[in-house]
Image 1 (cartoon, rainbow, N blue to C red):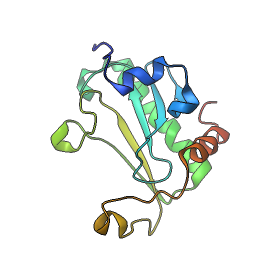
Image 2 (cartoon, rainbow, N blue to C red):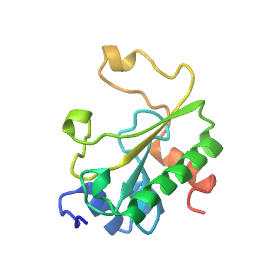
Image 3 (cartoon, one colour):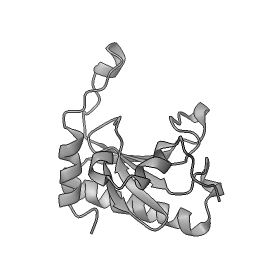
Image 4 (cartoon, rainbow, N blue to C red):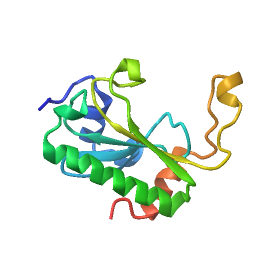
Length: 147
């Protein structure tokens, strides 16, 4: 099992004990749920194992099982708090697959609504997320993600 990496934000953030500032919503035994600081959409969650591994098959069975359980917890909280029409759930393994942090595997949960795509990513190379991360954090906490 991989250890912690001094330069990995997914290893650093849980050690800081500043969950609200770091948007950590829930801590499990083998992993945690946090808001993506650079979301594709409102409520974009990351589910991250504590183990610093680059791929899913490197996780032990308990960590892999909890990763899915945490994903289910995140989905349930998003449904309660934001009522998305759908969700994208996935893992980008490796730089070629689009992993922004390729050395520490993590799951993405992106809530989707009918008509939520817009022209800004195409013409302006930017995304518009119409809600502050702090507001989304509060909604998910109120929806019981940490219960």
